[in-house]
Image (cartoon, rainbow, N blue to C red; front, side):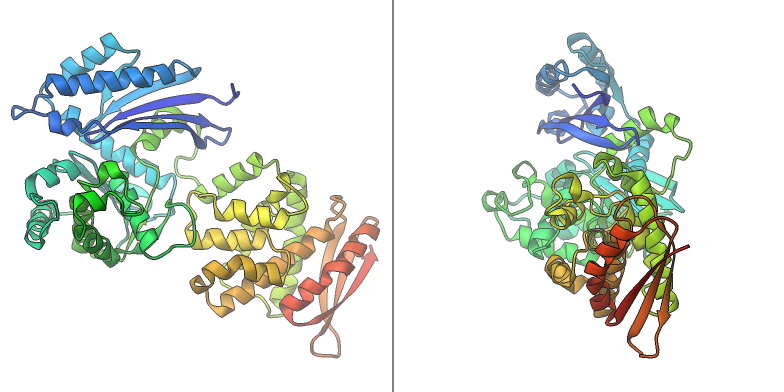
Amino acid sequence: MSQQPYYAVIDIGSNTIRLVIYKMNAYHVLFEEQNLKYTARLRSYLDKDNTINKEGINQILTTLHLFQTVTRSYELSSINVIATAAIRQAKNRDEIVKMVEKETDYHMTVLSEKEEAYYGYLSVIQSTNLEEGYTIDIGGGSTEITYMENRKIKHYHSFPFGALTLQQEFIHNDKPTTLELEKLNKFVCDQFREIPWIKKRNLRVVGIGGSARNLSQIHQKQCQYPLSGIHHYEFPSEEILGVINQLKEHPLSSRKKVEGLSKERADIIIPAIQAIFSFTHYVKAPSFLMCRKGLREGYIYETLISNQVTDRFPNITEKNIEALSVKYNINNMRIASLKKTAFLLAEQFNSAGYLTLTGWQNFLQQAAQLNYLGDHIESESVSQHTFYILSNTALNGMNHKNRIILALLASFKNKSTFKDFVSPYVTWFTDHELEQFEKLGAILKFSYFLNTTNRNVVDQVKLMNSKHENKFTLKVMCHKDFVFEKEKCEKHVKHLERAYGIEIELDFQNI
């Protein structure tokens, strides 16, 4: 067993019951060890008097007994069982809680509407860059919406409808009709109008939960998205309608085969996505942002982590970059020296008018922190490994475009490799941006060789223009012997020259 602590969360929802076992590292970053689910559809076992019937209770107990065989195989620091709308709304909830405690290893906590909304918000704030906007989590039997401002929750509301209830109430045909969807849209919009803070704000909407996840996956398949992962995936909210139009043309049998859609959710996905679209349209959201973290992560953060940190709302990206550097055993002393040299060099080119990209300092800082992390796997293919790892790692707080920028800079080898790496994403950037990324990447690569022996030999650098317009002298002032640094830099200065379109003469000196 790993020395890292394990934590289990069992989430009993209206649609699914899910067990997730997490590991947590020294940076309080959670990693999934196990993610198991059973589609129980508890909402369908709720009788007219709001009692979960005997069959529904048996579903709960049977599923928990299955999970119990897994949780008993781990040395868990804690096991948390949380229940949401289906059990919260049940008249016999207390009886169910007692039965679970009597017949299983677990104690069940039934979350209030406020807690469910708050934990969802907390997962968003701890994993995305959203400053102001709405969150929406459509479960099986309820829909939680929050509004945040300056990363702080301002309002929340839990609506007593979800994917299952909307399906049961409005969709009566295998292929939903236009009239059915119009009635569903009117219903949910009427509900939104009852809440005065839900109004047109022209702000992003963040989606949480399984319905939002399937929506994002289907949209990625529709547009042949080149990047893996849905966390922090963002697209124009009006394009949600295209997903609805695609799905409603399929009967259930073929809808189950739609790429990106899980079979278990195929029968209830259309009302869920329609409700999401109705909300984004109602508040005039310019885009829809997917957050892969949700209720469980928010709950575990609040109950297990928040009392161990002094800053509840840290720089999420910076925190995760640090965690990634630890994971790949990056030498902090080498990185500190690399950052120092890279910024000395970059400031010279900036003063000469070559760096014109807004925010280049931030891009260079992040890329230097993770420069050539692929060396942890194999030094011979360090550039390829670095790009693959960073382009396929979901960094909390970082959107997909910035993730590719980070991967391009940290992996920079030469112009040819740069073009190969960026080719699937070339439409994401302007020609000017691509030119600037190459310049920054070349600075980082050259700085790497200015630190060849990892002895921090460089004290100052100075870029001096000669009498010829495109010829420069790069004066490198060192306070230690620089034989190996000079040898490597003379070999690789050509990449710096090609990126900037100039000739560079190196002048190493001792001070």
